[in-house]
Length: 189
Image 1: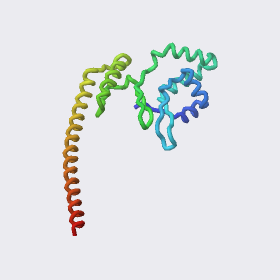
Image 2 (image 1 turned 120 degrees about the vertical axis):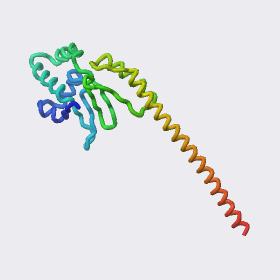
Image 3 (image 1 turned 120 degrees about the horizontal axis):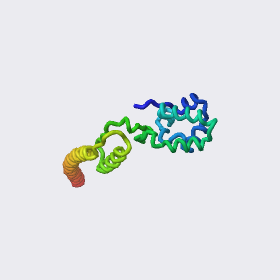
């Protein structure tokens, strides 16, 4: 997994302000996808891929005395095809991103049928932008197999629940009848 650096550590290391960091983000000098939010005891903290962001900040600091930030941003945009593409995963614990060049396979486990389309879409993107081979049909086939197995488990569980539900209804009906009989007998005494 890629080593990360916290926002606090980054600002201290390079002596830059919070405002400068976010201005550079707005200008496109630092890609938004490099800002990874993660849960922490104090709330959410922002982290960055250490190597990429440090190289970028060093480059900005080196050039900003001889070039405008706008020109640096244009230069970066001109070289944008050289920037690594990442898979960004946003979850309850924050955001994680992985360079596509480091992904060897993607396995989706226990997802609903909509996931097959997401995996197919993702596979087509990966196939176009990364130096890894993606067998879309194999991925979709594995997802469908998993969906079928999970669906079968759900059907069996549903049948089992239906049986339990029917048994409970019968028992409740007998209990209700017994209670009614007891009240009727008390009323007749």
